[in-house]
Image (cartoon, rainbow over all chains, first blue to last red; front, top):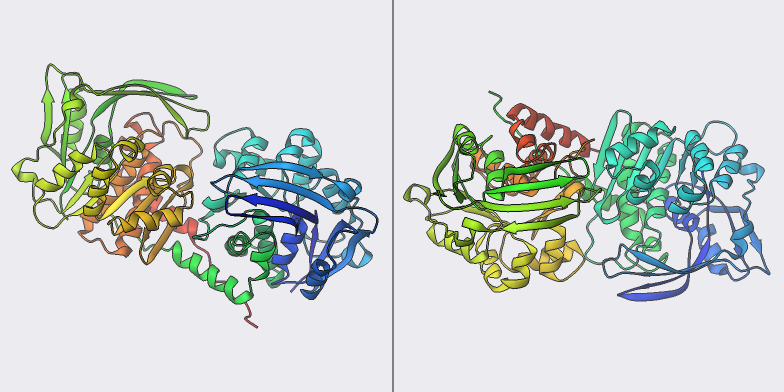
Length: 309
Length: 309
């Protein structure tokens, strides 16, 4: 087993869906990812919070074995705040408000004890900050990065530098189409691989995920759920689950990456079953395992014998 | 091996995509389906064409072992004509023109020799006509039906009568959401199963397909293609491939249906690689088999061992 370094946002979110709402609930990419990863491997978290960030949330993470030495607390500052509303289809969302607050000055500093981490997830932050983290890591490390449309539009050069240095780029389907400037996902993945990462994972929301490399194409549907409550954090829970399995087994062959994508799919499914962290918090290793087995069974089909004339 | 009855439109299509166009090319749901099925099992086709329908197209189908006894030729009539344009993303399409022509008076009459068919695909036509076909079939028959948004809106009662009598309903994701009035596909499938069919197949285009029953959930991604040329007919090629395998093996257990959905996925992928029937025509059994094997390999992942504490 190996440690996982996770760098990204820690936030308070107000989320509204057609089926309910949550006000100022704890969220942020790094918190979702850390919660998922912590089921499998020790986490070293880097982020920044204000004095309004609930102490219980930090206690919860510590209770899960998450090292908070890299979390900066600005007592007289306010935490990053995001507010959004989801459409009836639970896919399209509209951002109502974004207040960067203490996150505006976020400058990730890795404690000495974090520098030799074998696994790292750079959640969605400004690519310059992702590069700064990469500079601070010592020794070999399997690095996954996420990003967003804003950086693809405004910080493409820095983003391409990040992509050149990571092992795996995680993008949703809209982002990879935008980054590669083509609607065809197979083509788009090829163009992103040209930028440097050995692997690309395309997150397709309710349609599942794909893992691609130069000679690999793995696809998996999403875990079927009768009720989706809040999709916020699904992609970060996915990433956290993925890197958690890699770190748990301390191995990242293509074969392991397929299994990690499956486990990420299972983790994401639990995440969307409750508002904020609720869904992920009620996930345990047994249920995670059960969902992975269900996914394995769900995709099986027996060989098709056709008479070749 | 058993015969497959296919009932539906035979058309001339004008299609434009950002990557090219085809004018008055042979198409129609029944023609796509019959072409795919004919790779695997004998087809009995029911449809209507005008004097403008190319003789070579009928010759091609006959050469593939398709029985045309049920195809009505109206020498002084014009064939069903559809014209549409696809968006850059190759998913959204706009219908520019629909001329029903001889299809307006289509009243499917099964030749005596067709009445005992063990497998039947009712392609997208008015549900009243689908019911009329069901009345004319004798003996046990595995029936799959397709439909469209127009009938969901305007002929719901007749459509529900069809669904109560078929074994498998084939719908795309937009259609099943509309029919079941919920955005959640798992919920929507449950509601459609309540209407009668033993199985529901949800076609998700580039995102693959799902097969659901009361105690079954199978999911498969689409076959990855670097170039999609013309998506017209993909769903019908999928259906034709599916029912072709069931008829070839004369078996329709859940296990077979999973394999049939995989084979349909492979057939659909070939269909979209060329304009009109071009892609399907260049597909042979060897390539179909190869694509099924690729799909099988694409979804495999090994068991995930998690220590359950």
